[in-house]
Each structure stands twice: as structure tokens, then as C-alpha cells.
Image (tube, rainbow, N blue to C red):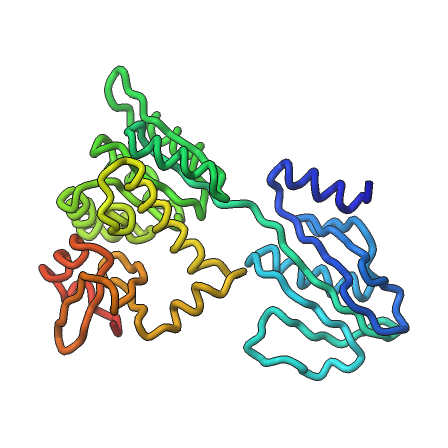
Length: 320
């Protein structure tokens, strides 16, 4: 078997990130061959051949950037390095060919990064439904059931959560009000992509107010409580669908490898909920408020109600 593909299969099985580099076009003279591949590991070790040392050096630089942000790139090395693409096309990089042999080499640089962790906390029917559906999605699923036969133990809870969570993960708390505040406390200093709590609007508001009252102690992502998009779900499975839909939307809006998020952010109908900071469509959301001469949109009723109580608190420093 091709050694490059064999190593790629090994790293995929271990869920270890790497970059695959493929020669897609050449102009003689050059030592590179169309179709040749090289694999770049996280420590910049290279397996395979895509050209001379000068080509390899520039390829490693761009591969390192791709591994960091997850964006594929086309790297063009040419004696004629004049721009041929729009400056806004950050996925095409043109650099001068510095090898003595000259020629042109075009490399497709494709990062293979780990799927993010989805941590589901709780043993409720909703937690079970979220975990079951998440197994069909591109996440690394982790669960913490919070068994407590002898009463709550915050130290043990923190250990369980810290072992399961990692920076950049998505967290769903479905404990039905049992120890949800402890979970938030345990993860308050971890950089998360999403923290959602399955709760009633009233319970969600209480949790948000506690965080707002102590901003120096909580610097994480805005709390989604109630978690999930407002699709009117009642059954645990329906609620799970709403939560995973919210997470997927957030993930793909922030996904540097896709453009669906950028299109949504450029749409004039898309605004940011000033309470939870989720993007919502101002034209379709039923939760809208005109305040201070401007229309504000919200993802759910609880966010709208929170805004109406203290609008100045949420619009400070915002443009809408």
C-alpha cells in the first residue's frame, strides 16, 4: 500500500490531525509530479515527496496555517508570482518559486482535523436522546451521567467534567435542574464553543442572571438556556433535534472551511440576539422588539423577556 495513504489511515483511526498535500499541476522544469502526495503531521514531519527543499519549506509553512484554522488552500509556487486572484480569496496563495530549477508547482493543501467534542451531561431522557442522535454526527461524543447515590460531590463532578471536556467543545447540560449550576461553575474558565442547559425559560433566566451578577467569574460563551432552537418540541427526541440543530448551525457558521456561515452573516436579515448572541433571522423570528428606534431580534421568548427588563444592559456597545 502507498505509505502516505497507509499513514493517513493510521492517523484517521487514532483521530490525530494531519495535512494531505497533493500536486495538482506543474509547469516544467520541476521535480514535482502531478498526483504525488505528501502527508504533514502536526509536528511537521513529512511522509512522501512533492518537490525540492525550497518547495517543501514553503509547503510546510502553509500546511501549518491550514492545520491551525482548518481551511484547505491552493498553494501556487511560480516564477511569475504576480497576483492572479482576488485579494479576498484567502484560499489561494501565490508565492515566488525560489528553486533553481524554476518551473511552477500547484499544491492542494487539505487539513484533516479532529471532530470537536460534544459533552452531554445528565441521564435524563433528553440527555439520552441527544447522545443517541449525536452518534450519527461528526462529533466525538462524551457523556457524564452525574450518578450520586450518596449525595452531591462537587469535587468528583469537576473531575468527571474536566476529564470529559476539552477547550473548544460543545456542552449540553440535561440534568433536569439537578446540579446544572455546578456544571456551569466547573466549566466557567474553559473556552467552550457552546454551553446549553435544558431548562424552562424561568430556570434559564435564573441561571443567566447569576452569571450576569458575577461577570468577573464567568468569561465563557453566552449561556443557551433553554437550549435548542424554538421548534415547539415536546418529546425528548424533538428537543434533542432542536439542540443538535442549534449546535450544528453555530458550528457551521463558525466553520472556516465552509461559506454558508459567511453568507448568512452578510445577509441583511441576519442579526445578533443581544442577550445570547446567537444569529437570528429578523424577518422570520417571531421574537422582535422595537426599542430606541431600532428593531431587535431574539432566538426565543426568554431572551426577548430578558431584554425588555433591562435593554440598556444588553445594547451597551452594540450596533444592533
